[in-house]
Image (cartoon, rainbow, N blue to C red; front, top):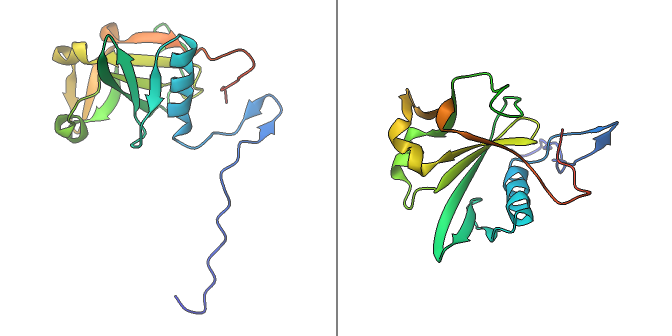
Amino acid sequence: MVGRSQPERQPALNRSHGSSTLPAPANDGVALVQKALRHKKVDARIIKDGRIVVHKEGRRLLVEVKRSGVVFSGEEDFPDESIIFEAQHIHDKANPKPWIYIVLSQHRNSMAVVGSNTEKFWIKDRMYYRCPKEYIKFKPVEVPDGECYTI
């Protein structure tokens, strides 16, 4: 519109406040998972659509990273019997489909890993796929020493 000034957009910043850090942009979860995979000596690269490609045994496998609003550190304190990890229409149209889905806890210190090999156990929940807790692998997010990703 002519005559109206738009508010200036400020870049998202990660500012420390005491011992916590404000949330980073959504794509930071992908970078975090890539660092954690590389820390485990896995060849992991971020591709243009924000996914991670893992090269394993001569195959190119896709890893889809999601961020959760749920706080959990593992299976013991995960608050539900299943986890929502993808919209049905997105997964059903994907080609190729992800090898694994990684859902980061709200604090990004733990992840829930849903493998494509568990697909026969997935639950269709309205518009989303859920994976029952017993088929999820819960793992801590480990990155090189000196790097902190907790909020």
